[in-house]
Structures are given as structure tokens and as C-alpha cells.
Image (cartoon, rainbow, N blue to C red; front, side, top):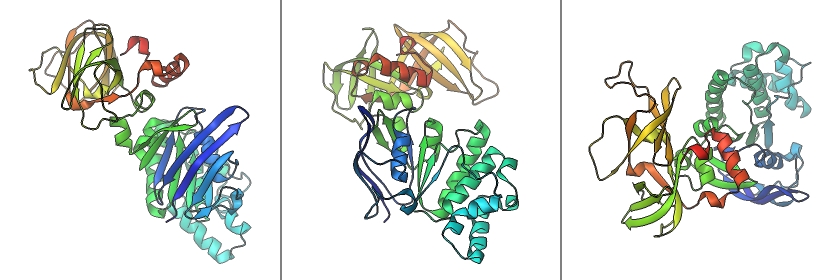
Length: 391
């Protein structure tokens, strides 16, 4: 198996650690994403895998082959860059054929393989055009075809869709997944876009400050973040910080920071064992919360709070509410499922009830004090929701 292995991989620039002791295995045929903010080290990591940067420490293996010190042209790895890097003076056919001609492959085989690759990316009818006549999405397809033509074991994609508009990015994501399924090789995808990473990946690694913060299946990271950083960076969340005042079986009673609101939760997949008296955080996704003027029937497995609507934002597929409960503020996403509503529409200053199932909350063994103010500010900027106005 051509598993890609990173063993203690680090890259230092004088006193700055761009990548810090990354150890990871990526299985053959996986579509694996590195996700993180700008400057987190994901592109430096990719450049070391490609051979464009030499590691300060650590090893890189593909299968049993140590490729750590091999030059880029001797590695079974190709890269697709954000800026496409196509030759403007060559036709599409010649761009894709370039690598094969360098290897002095037979002319008939080149013809056959290039046409096959252009069919794969649905660009065979554009083979005689020049890159300047193509759209951004078409250029990206040609860049992928040119990278795949040499049959690499690993394809590296460095934010390949960043220059495309939203609709085209969404379309190209589907095309990328189809291409990946067709060729069956390992794809490593670098992005700062959470939606891209969640929708396209078999597994995701979240990076920050040169380290992998959490790695796993996209839905597992989303539903069970192991840190405040992961909870903030993947999607939107409400983070409640409080003291554990009660534990019974799988139930935890959390006294929130305002000293008024007690929140019960249940979660059988703790990343840690809660302790009485310890201050921790609780992550609650906005779409998990229901909001209504009517008080729901009390149930043992539901949390029910009452608050006041402070802000409403219509977002097409859903409406976002900011609801103040005591000194805390909750963000709620209410999806639009019907054209007509039985209930009267909610408005600013309305008194409402918030309720959610215990299993929709998740404990995190951290507090805001574990982060510097600069780190918290960056996190808040990344999600557009100030902690001063949130929980």
C-alpha cells in the first residue's frame, strides 16, 4: 500500500516554527484535507511533501520509500496550484502532453493518454484552444489533467478553487470528487474553506500554529470538537463556559459564567472525564437549537431556556437569531422548511424559549483562559461573531 507517512515533520525559519512535529498517516486512495487559517503551516507542509521545501526535521514516506530528500521531479507526487501555472503559449493539448514529452514517451501513446485525460476532465473539445481563451474553471481542469497525466501516487492540491466564484467552486468540488473516484489515487487538499473541506474529504486535519489540532472524519470533528479552536473553526457554534456542579451517569450539570443559567447535557463520547468543580466549555451548534414563543413540554432529555431576541438576520435558507439569556447570548439558525408558517413570525424584543436535546451538546476540556487574547480575536474574526456578544 502506498500510504503517505509523515514522521515528526518540522520546518523552522530561524526562530519561527512553520510546521511543528507533524506525525500522520494518509491511506492510499484517500481524499485528505488540511484545513486551517492563513499562516497555520498547511501550505508549508504541502511544499515539503512535494519536495519544494526541505524539512528541518522528520521523514516523509510513500509506502516503504523514504522520499524526504528526493528532488521534486523524482517523487511520485504532482501538484495543482491555485494560479494554474499553465503555459500560455501552448495549446491545451500541448499543456497536458508536456510532462510526457519531457519523458520522451512515444508520440502515439502521448496522443492516446492526453485524449483520455481530457475526456476525464470533460475538456476534449477544447484541446486546440490556448489557456487565455478558457474560464477559470476550465483552466483548473486542465491543470488537474496535466498533473494526473504522469500517473502520480499522490496529487497535491493547494487551494485549487480559491480564485473561482461560489457557484463554480461548488461545481468544481463535485468534479474533483468524480475525478478522484475515477483515478483512485491519494488526493491531499489544502484549504482554509471549512465548507470545502467538510464536503469533499474522507478525513480532515485541522491545523493551527504549525500543529495538527484535531484529525478525523468531517462529521466527527463537527459534532465532537476536541478544542475551542476546532469548535470555532469548523462551522458556527455557541460556546458556554462554566463550572461542573453535578455529574450523574452520563449527565453533567454546568453552572454558566453568569451564575444563573444551569445547563444539563448528555454525551457518552467524552474526550475526557469531567470533574466536579472544574471549569470547562460546552459547544452547541446553532442549528441544533429550536426557538419558539410557546413553551415546550418539559422533558428530562431536553434543555429549556427563556430569553429575548436581540437580532434577526434573514439568510435565504435560514434565519439567524441572537437571543439573550441572562448575561449569555445564543446564536440560533432556524431553517426555512415551509412557504407559509402556522406561527406568527418572531420579531425583535420577543420573549422566546430555546430548547435542544441533551445529546446535541458536547463538552470541551478547555476554557477561554487557555488562549491568548490575540488567538481569541483571530478566532472571532474567522467566524464573524464576537465572544463579547456571544456565549
